[in-house]
Length: 354
Image 1 (cartoon, helix red, strand yellow):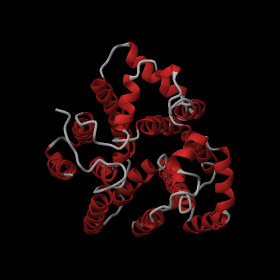
Image 2: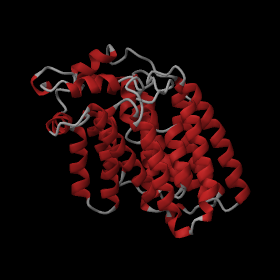
Image 3: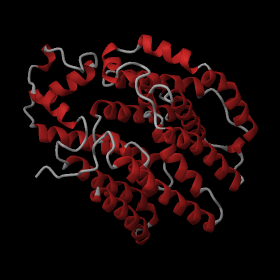
Image 4: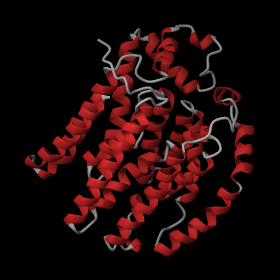
């Protein structure tokens, strides 16, 4: 656990010291340094860190896994990806290193491109984001990385390749196909705070009739996932996750109001990230009855990891910026410690592999 607290401190130190660097180089240097630190923590971990790490290493070391009925049978993209490394004769330790590099680079690039405060985004990624999951769930972590580039392609108006990349992500983890629903939300333009309220009212029936939709999802879900979770309704979600999922979009709107943000002038990126954040809230509502559905929300989490720092940076009052930042930092650290110690992802007892 101490390694993560050290990492939090290093993020804070970098945020203070980065001001000695020329302003036009601060973003790049922050991304490189923090990317390197996160890569080292991920890449040098022992196989005991992460509940699924040993499972993936056992699979990797099974040279004939393509001919066996392994758990990952359907995701052929991941199969081919694994086969490439085994054909090249790389060790399982190198396999962890290269995957850590790919995952870290993907998030670092995303933060560098879209965050107004890279240090804060890395901090949120560590504490309330996807860092813990990337230390365990390799397939879905790689799928999320592909989705990050899909979002990037969308902003670059390469929509065809953006949609194709979602399909590619689904060959690593089938749940990535769910991200396609985000494209339907992109046609909705946010032009006023009243319109945000109307949108929330329109989607409320989805929440009310969520059990009907959950039954439908259960019918189309791979049987192996249902067996893993013991059924679509087997495990209930921690209600704290729902509270946070609701709080984040509300918090963003409050920050926009404080900064007198004109929503008619909102950027495409801000609008998209806000809608993805709202979709995350909706999915979390569904996960009240089935935590298995919480996996779908992972693809939307990077949106608010960028949106929160951006909304804070838009505040005109420096006092408000620092006061709100301090409150968020304290809350996130408490949440991270409580959620990580003894958590199901088993990353709290960190050990280096050597």
